[in-house]
Image 1: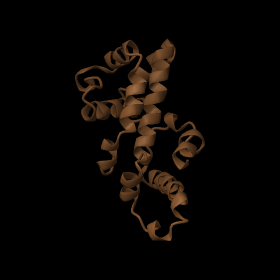
Image 2 (image 1 turned 45 degrees about the horizontal axis):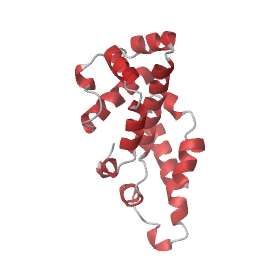
Image 3 (image 1 turned 90 degrees about the vertical axis):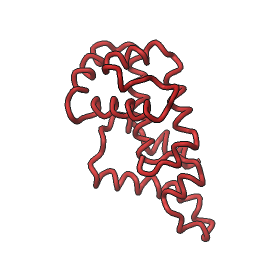
Image 4 (image 1 turned 120 degrees about the vertical axis):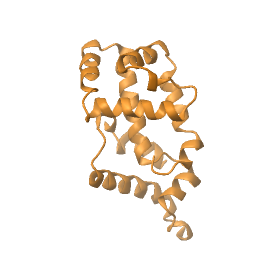
Length: 158
């Protein structure tokens, strides 16, 4: 229930956020983890569980992976809807060293290193990556499925 709330209301529009500065991310992380802990409040013995243990034991998305999934989802939807003028702007902005466009392609490259069946993004330009995503209508489904696997819960600081 907490996961559903977070993904639908608590993190609304977070797919448009760039990587957060450390202090802001810490506040976001604390908020997400506190929401995950609400169901545990009734069980006093589990109130002292660490963030990592909570993520692993209850198979919930880490706050950083919530942001990654949301950013990739936004880009994938734009690619599939073929919003050409926005994609042109995103591709130009992706070459900058910071910002949402840069971060979403960094997320895709990170995902490609973690997921064998995802695109070989490290060898592709950002435009080629968009073309591969466009040609694979199941891309977003694969990404969501991968983020919901227990594999990611074992990676610290991801």
